[in-house]
Length: 227
Image (cartoon, rainbow, N blue to C red; front, side):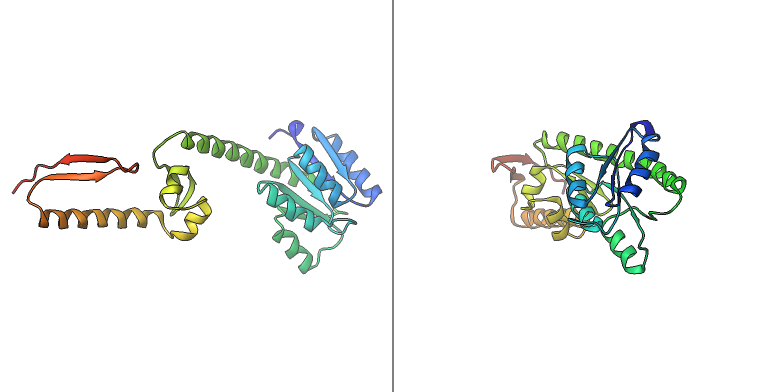
């Protein structure tokens, strides 16, 4: 993402610090939004959807860590950098557990912070591009009547409604928690179908098989069996 396209939200309750960094960033990025506490920051985030969020930790009304958790719940791709005068182990742990990408002292050199903003701008672009691609794939899958799913490794990443309905699941997350490995499901299904066919031919001398489709209507298949 080009810097002239980048939008940044800066949340800081100390006016002098907020004004100083905002003036610096104003010369570097497309737009800089500012807020004096977490509640105002959350309001601006929801309205403006900035690319990167910079936030202090200890603020009135709503702290930075609490605000970050809410933002990540609403947008898991949000890019957050903490700026704080506190850098003890517990603060750092809580910051990164809330979904932050980076942590800086609010008194660090602006150039170091800006280098990190440049790096995260490319991360932001990749996430936005991936989100667009994913939404496009989901839209395409939903227009198909067949069971369709996109698999990453051994897990389903995207699935259409027909797929989820077949496995009696309401979401991809529910499917993945119920079934450990997608490949194993179909392998077991194939093995079961082979066993069913073997049992059929052991009990029947004719070569006509009736198979019900997903809608319940029968399809008939004639098999030529070599003795």
